[in-house]
Length: 105
Image (tube, rainbow, N blue to C red):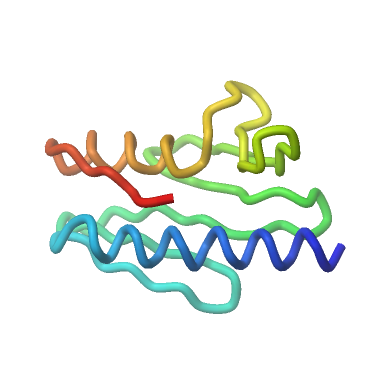
């Protein structure tokens, strides 16, 4: 359990930092394990660690993702699509801002 919490916290901190650096149009806040990304139009993406399932959950654009740790690639992968966490967040933010956003992993 401690490994999960450490990895999830590190991933959320890296996402926070990458999103802050990526676009001035974003309001990014990490508090109590919840990363909130707010856009100028007031819409939000929420990411949080979910200890019971050992996943990082994301809610964005009226959809949800569950990212589980994938040891062979040392990355967080969506349990349905296999998409990597940073890649998926970057893609969604890029679509929302209508400009390319590349997040540092």
